[in-house]
Length: 538
Image 1: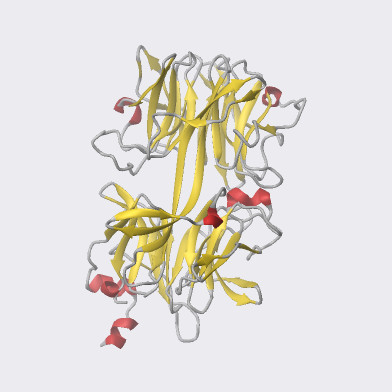
Image 2: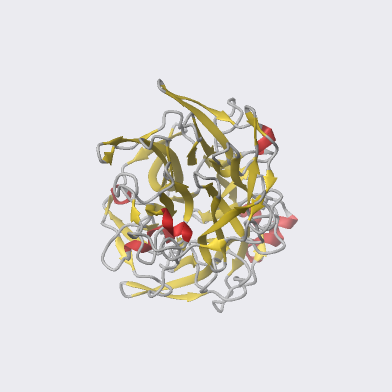
């Protein structure tokens, strides 16, 4: 009987005997790796956090940035001053109902009043602008007070640019800017220059993520034109904005191809497609332009600046009386770190990081193009060791989601096809001090879909991964495959009983092989959920 149960694919067993509803294991977390032990009370957890920072001009420089007082335990981004400087607009995943203290499953537009005596509380913009559900980002105010923002609702493709006209003390219902600005591609982050005649925005498609310029023509906008190499390139560019006098243009890049991640400034003559007097340079490097900084806005007098600061961090934590206690984890300090993976014995950790080091290209940071490994001996973690690019050392690749089997085999995902932003599944076996990688076959992978996360069982005989391939419940869904005796993998099958219309991703299998952990948003609660593998035929 045990043999027949183990032989069943997860999807078939789940269909015959639906598993219990997944339980919330850890709220507001994206990815987790548990240490071995019967109590399951110690883990590495990955969280993405972002807040809004403010700095003031001091002589020729800027004060040390400080978080804005209305920022709490939620995520914030894309700040934008109103033309009179009295309001700061931004997005946040805080819930519009104050009774809900947990983060919302989507983002909303907010604003806070700025006065001589300080900042007022955050105010949720009216539903006439927001619509239902949320998912709005990058609010920006035109000189005439019209509100521009990005949303996927009613779009021509992916995300589109919208405008809500200023009406008295509020805004009219938003309208899609339509073609030629919006298209079947992904348009986002719209900013008007101080004259209101130039619209700069980002368009992302298979060729890259670049800034475009459209000029006002009558009551609409002309055909967009891609800005030049002074700002665009394979590094990607977004979050455009302007100095109050319109003479300086700002943008954000995640880094790559010789560009460090951060916020840059360049002469606004690039908008006239003329070579600037000087190349683009970081804004106050080390203070304002740092890895994770994005989106910058100035008060009308130019003496106050706000920007967003995002951090991807890994914490070591343990549960004590239902409270998550943060512990010291020295190898993750001061860098962006994502996707922790632990070997089943808890002695080895592999994670993605933007840290510099021998053989690691610093311009690859925001693409998570490097894995790092650290080992634990006698309770102490050793220094992280760089793992050379496992797919193609000559290219800056997005590499993510490591997972280790007990025999040391490493599974992960990588964007490996030139001109594509889709991730695919890879397997790497130990080879000396490093690994030898190969792509997994078509039984698991699909060239037309994104395979974004993968987890392997301790025995190495089961893979669970997430994909947006057609036929799923919506967004990213969970799939499974078992390894055959000859080492090949069975065709991937969806975990219908677990998948929802929202994201179901970041799977992890506990060190004892008994529980599946994964990220999901259920009943409006984002976090790590758990379900017994035994209930799914495991």
